[in-house]
Length: 115
View 1 (cartoon, helix red, strand yellow):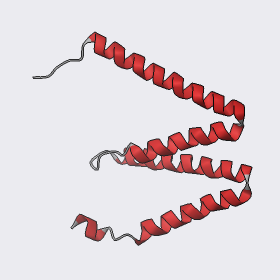
View 2: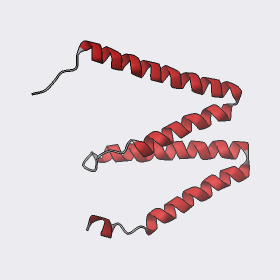
View 3: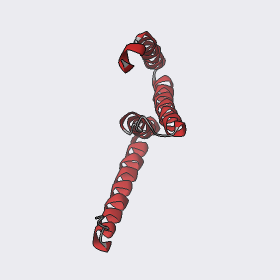
View 4: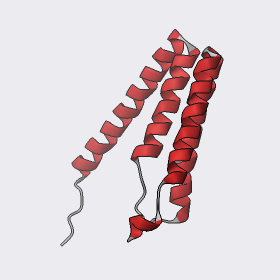
């Protein structure tokens, strides 16, 4: 037996999604009014968080995993670009952290994970 959501539940969900989107837009606009890098860093942090937290299931199509990797790369690249624009040593810290993460990812033993 399947249950269909009622029109009231669908309207409530749609209203909640609209309020959430307008709230996020308001925060980004306010941060952007303070300083362009604050708004852009918050937006890129959100994209990075979405890429990290919204993991597709293992049996999902390959394109879903590629979209997640793209979101992570765009978010982290944007954050690193903002860091370079504000203070060059902060940008290099971002690059060094990415290199460190890549090194740790390469040193993990994936063959023993499946066993």
